Length: 175
Figure 1 (cartoon, rainbow, N blue to C red):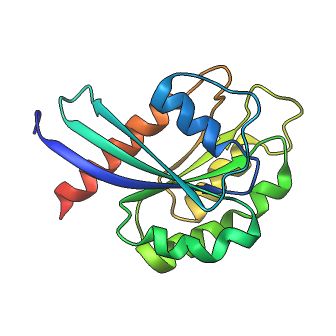
Figure 2: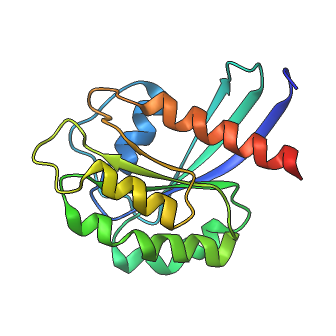
């Protein structure tokens, strides 16, 4: 139904330094800052968008600190979330190995909400993760999809959030 309006809470999680804050900043303000300060706890951003289908979506984005010492607060922020982006740095395999921990935290609190895996820093080399490997992991772990992006070069940023919004609308309509 075009013209309908939705509000979605979306958590953005992943290891420290993978580029969660840069991703959200690029999406919300269209800008890129090279050196972000470490997020302490969680940061909140919002963006209103009109999809190509005509629906209006208000995205409430919760950017979580990736460092282990802050992880204990994540479950509280996951309550009532509609969906999640779980980010990893494609130039750092260690961040990819942490995805199961993030998925467990989100799904334990929020249930089987739609999750998109987001491989960040596509513009940097060398890539330590193969796209096929990440795609297969997304399928095996029941995530909607895996997308690689570059906040610096603005590659796939809008597409990630538009896909999340469309999937969330789809899940609401399925009841």
